Length: 140
Image (cartoon, rainbow, N blue to C red; front, side, top):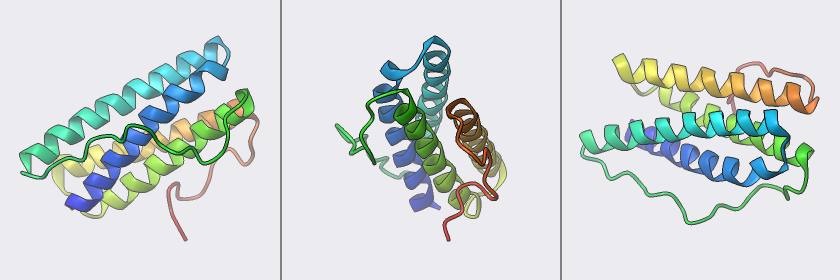
């Protein structure tokens, strides 16, 4: 359980960093959506830090910077990065679902579905098809 929650925390850290980098390339509506998404990721990060502390596990701090998977130079690449970030978050929460119970499981399911929905919104905004993917976050 602890490694899956730590992985989710790392994904939340990366999403916060990524949203901070992509917003400058978006129009006003896109910037508002990016700010809202970043706020959700910050709240999830904070919840995870508290949970890991309650479990007497040391939460890993955020990196000072993250390597982006591709250059972000315009609105299209910014929205593509948003999709990438949300898919990464969905994958880590999907993996965590199997290892937690009770309220933590509800939190993981909610985080997983929120990320999948946000990825779909970004795909729609960017004109990326298909809009949805079967079993978001599934690797292999």
